[in-house]
Image (cartoon, rainbow, N blue to C red; front, top):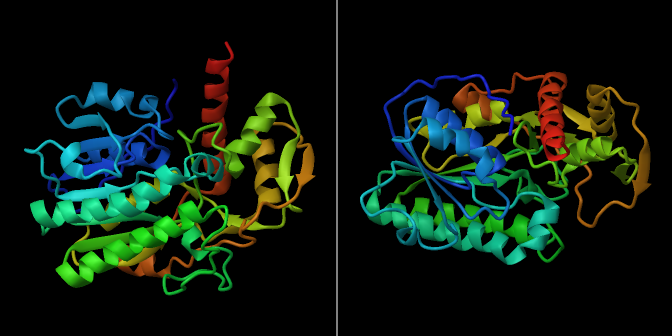
Length: 340
C-alpha cells in the first residue's frame, strides 16, 4: 500500500507521554498514532478492526518497534482486559467507533457499545489507575443532528432523532459525552470532548460510503455518481492534517479540563460542488444520478470554531483543492493496487 505521509508538526509541551489510542487502526486514529510517535510519545494502539485496517499502521509498527504497541481488542470491554498491567496511560484518546452510516448500520450494537460502555469503562479505568490523567472523547458533529442553529456552536443541544436509523451512532456519542460530564463533575476527572466535523484525507476507506470516498469510487469504477437529494445539502470538509493538529494540541494543552470544542472547517459547500471538484481532481466530467435523501440526513452542517481558535489558536489551513488532490491521489493508488 502506498501511504501519503502528512507533514510533521510539533506541539509545545513536548514532554513524552504514554498515550492509549482506541480506534488506532482507523482513518483518524492512525494519523494520531503517526503524529504522536513522531513527537516522541509512547503509544499503545487498540482496535477491533471492524472498520479499521492493520495496513494503516503496519509501517509504524516497523518504524517504532520500541515506542508503539498494537493490540487487537474490543474497546467496549473494560481496559483491564487489553491494557498491560504495567502500562498506565497519561492520556487516553477514545476514537474507537465506526463512523460512516453504512458501517455503523451494519454494526449498530458494536457502535453504541464502544461509545457508551467503552467510554464508561475507560473513565473508570483512568480514575482508578491515573486520576490525574486525561480522557479525550471523540464526539461528532452528528450530535447536532439536522441542526436548527447555524453554524453550530458547542452550546447548541442539537436536533436528533433518538430512535432513527442513525441513532446507534448519534445517541451513543451523546451518551459518551454524558459519561465524560459525570466523571468530570462528580470525580474531578480531566475529560475533554472534541466534536469532529466531516474529515477527509489519505487512509479513508475507499468503500467507506461517505461523500468523498463514495464519489471517488464511482469515478474509478466508471459509474454515475449517486447524488442524494438535489445535492444542495451542505457539509464543511476538514483535511485530516488540520484536524489531527487540533486534536493533539487539545490533548496536550494545560488548563482545559472539562472543555468541549468543535473541530472542523467552517468553509461550507454543497455536496454537489464537492463532487464536481473531486471529479475535476480526477480529470473527468461528472455524470450524476439523483436519489432520495436518506432518513435523518442533515441538510446543513457547519462548525463555529471560535472556541477552538480562542483556546488553542487553531484553525484549518489546508484548502479543499489541495486536500482533495492528495486524497484522490491516495484513492487512485489504492485502486491501482487492488486492480493490478
